[in-house]
Image (cartoon, rainbow over all chains, first blue to last red; front, side):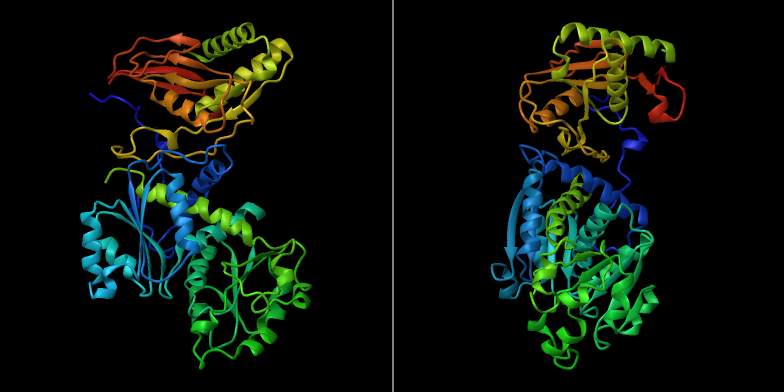
Length: 320
Length: 172
């Protein structure tokens, strides 16, 4: 005999069965939409007097950041706190990886600690996949090399949906270093699955025509794209890790692709301006544009927290 | 129960709420998704009809407040809660279709408390089928239906189930 909660109706059971979130490439449009709907519920929690729910009480989350990141890590950490999970942070410098331990051994140690959810940031593409297939714990990809950054794309999709109601039919321009950007890749997969038109803009060395095979358009002239865009998503120019042979130089980049005050005048009045942060004021975006009325950059931060709560709940919310 | 019996039961609950709450402006009828939300809406409609007074309605998500995190095999869908704040000085009436173990109601009370501290919380249900596992009792009941635990109560409402209103008792 069963006591307690009555059996959940079919329409009250989550349309999500995945243990892990590794990327947007493998998700269906229905799964993406379900994450966005779930995010609505968790965003509401942030407006309560007590911003904490017991949805993951007793679960242990390990924030395993082999590559440094403050924003994404703290966002996951706060999301876990708000779900009542316990959090351990392990970074590259504190982990035994620097002492020569392999990723697999580190993972097995995390498993031995009975971690329920592992949030992994790693410089190698595929590292989350590697852990996910070997561990019982849920693995959430918080960025792997130039491969994917699914929660960033989901929060971008959520922010667009929140402002524009629907994503299908919108024209989204992603501007900057597309080739080395996991944010761009995850966004391209997500946006196309939900029916948006995507144009990638940047220097030809950083925006190879290869991306057209995914279904995106490619342009090397920002002025051609801005007038029809409903959303512009500016990627951070990671000048500290740009290689000379790909990157034209900061001054030339700003001249050709920076969203200056002057260029922003080409945008439709309701076009949203997004940026995954941290922003380089005066490089990919002018200060006045970043702080202007069309900018939803801070909404992205708030929504990131809600999206991560949703993802942690969906992957880690049942007994495995 | 057929559609007419449901209508009468909810109308009677509306009368009882009016009788027990002289300050209707302080009442918030908060439904538990998905059928509880519809029940709250209908009771509010009857109160409007009877008293010409509008009462606030709301939605309480219980999924994120459940007590079976470590054991459940199915993941419940979460919904966005919606309650008017501040709740201080107000009477929140939780509305749901079936009262069974009482665990949903406990979760709902937890959720309400994260919004603030209402003056009082009451409970209105269409059907009370018994088998409580927690010390919880309803303030307003549409119908008491004694059941065996292996039986299932199925409430259907036009708005949530695309069919005629009704309450069914399914054996096994």
